[in-house]
Length: 411
Image 1 (cartoon, rainbow, N blue to C red):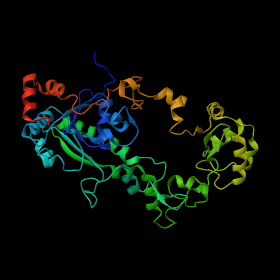
Image 2: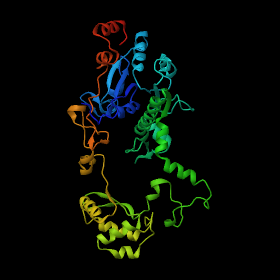
Image 3: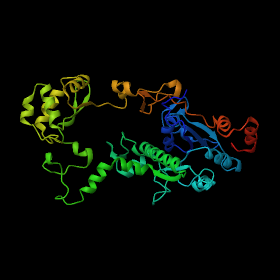
């Protein structure tokens, strides 16, 4: 019986990828697509990259290639190239998560592949994209966030310039997500019209796009102050772009609880009033009622001192229960270590089981008919599924597969 949670069970993706950009097809695999990763005989060295290494294999590989099949093809041989084309003839999507043009150099670019499958969606995801002065530069994930301005250097106690200890890794994660959305749009159009398309995306572009609020604010601030102002609740003073403008906030600020930290977010007057009533301190509201919206009581250190002492009187859980029962805005401030113990995380996400995917991994947080997605399969070893894929997808029998092996088609 078909599992209704396998939303993309009718989609086939041929993936040629190196390192992190292969995550673009992980979204498809998690939702039931048939994702076939075509690797060179030496394999993708993602299996040895970064840390941690779990039973000899990197977490980066175990997560990025879960749910996928791996076959090896020698794309420098005519037989290997033909097999690639044969696979594409059965597919909806080709993912080129490599430097743009890598497949074209092998005779497997969009112009070549649309001859065997006019409906194919050919999607390239790379670091800086296929155009522009940086297009040929090698790079890694952090580069896209330093390029976009999200990550800034810090100076240590000895005066050395360093990468900050904590970074969001936006481009390397959002780039594949943005690309996946675009690819599905391409597939819908191809199924409607019978015509595929070539599209290309860059992880650097995605990093900048995800920081649109700050970038667009800075651009807006280039205009005269009589055209672009701050918020009326701040007397129209221009705050620094994005969350940097929260530094002086008081009703929207981090506070220490008795056993951790919480984020207080009573920028709406109604939430601020509910908070004051709930702690039986309406005197605070009467003295500093603020404006109706977007009022953070900026720079009010007298109020901040009062709130600091108030928040220290209860635990994080007690404040969350308080917020829930008094309709006000308080959130936990977890760390990447503590998030796994958060009850909301455990209820909504949890971890995929070690025995299924090799280590505890976050699931794709999508619910279908009230249920989580099926657990994906373990990330494959190099060429693990070569024979199975050729038999299942291309109908090759054992003798044909052995003949191809002897010809060097698999390397």
